[in-house]
Amino acid sequence: MFRSNVVIFGIAAVLTAALPAAAQTPSNQDLEEIRKQIQELKESYESRIQALEKRLKEAEDSATKAQSTAAQAQESAAQAQQSAQSAAAPPPAQQASQSAFNPALSVILMGGYNNFSVNPANASVTGFLPAPLYGDALGPRGFSLQESEITAAASVDPYFRGQFTAAFEGDGSLSIEEAFFQTTALGNGLSVKGGRFFSSIGYENSVHSHAWDFKDPALVQTVFLGANFAETGLQLNWIAPTPLFIELGTEIGAGTTDPGLGLDTGFNRNGIPSWTAYAHVGDDIGTGGSYRVGASTLQTSTGNSPIPFADLDQTSGMTNLFSGDVRLYGLDFVYKWAPDGNPVDRNFKFVAEWWYREYAGNMTFDSATPAAAIQPFTARQQGWYAQGVYQFLPQWRVGLRYDRLNEGSISTAQVGVAAPDYTPWRAAAMLDWNLSEFSRIRLQVQQDRAQQGVVDNQVFVQYIMSLGSHGAHKF
Image 1 (cartoon, helix red, strand yellow):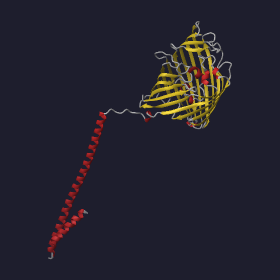
Image 2 (image 1 turned 45 degrees about the vertical axis):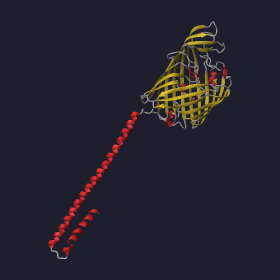
Image 3 (image 1 turned 60 degrees about the vertical axis):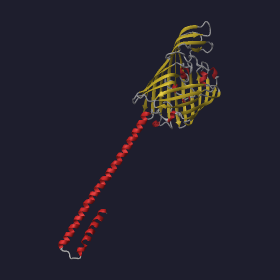
């Protein structure tokens, strides 16, 4: 538009200049001269317009480039200022997640009703050292509160997580079941756990009571390890980077727990009084099944704190003291099945464990008397259990368990200590209803023949309620 107006203006100027001559009759030569001048004016103006347009474009490009350079310079200056501030101030402590200051809290409530045909206060396991107060594991008659747990767990930072679990018994007593830290960033399948923790030997030992498939632990677990054998020390665990699940681990502890006697029975000695080792191998079977097999050992000794043993015949009332080494060896097997690997509607779980225990040392017989005799003493005993639990509907499960102990051999004929010729056993059946993943109501019937000459028919009704955030259970 600009160019057209200039051309028209130029033509008009030429015509105006030529008007005085228009009164005269122009010749052909004059007309040709006029046309030539008009053409020259037109070409001159077009050339000047093109030059102006070129300068305008160059000016616009220069302005754009200058703005871009200024923006880059401003950004570089801001980055330099930020780097200077970061170098002047120490970096803030990094945190893996907000849960470090907001731990996951959970409370487990357990209780129920127990019915025994024989007074559980007098229950024992015939022929097995240290002849534990078996009734404590079964609970009292009638209504009762059972163990309730409070757990707090959180990430400490990008390198550690921690967990604390306290257990309140029905009689009001309190115990620290677990209080440990665990590494999260060692890599290469390695992890370290430190503090107090349930040992990873066997299968059932590391499972908290609210996650048991039956109301009470297996008979061999109760006699050889207590409800849960806990270490206070360190655990090193390694999972191999292979398609086949391979787990190896070892634990060293302060010996604060004597196998079979429960927590807080410390050996009161320096060094490393106890250590364990375990190995687990597992894999899938088809699309619906999976398995895990394991082998474990526990090695410890009494040190300067001998273990009190009641007489095995349960009649003399004498108290004996054992000092020496305690060794356990175990095998375990777990198999799980669900249609196409989906356990929501139906699933099946089979568990079997075998344990062998050896005492080797000295026994002080009838230690409460001045005439107490000290003799070399060895005892080799074993036991096993097998159980299966089938979820036949989304909220209903049924299970069977069989326990058996073998009195083995005891190298003494001392009165009251020689093992009676008896094989303790139990059989249990249970049905539980799981209205949701947070609540369970269980009915269990059990015939208990752990004590020679005693048949105890038992009925348990149990509730388990989970409050708050709770982590997943083991395989």
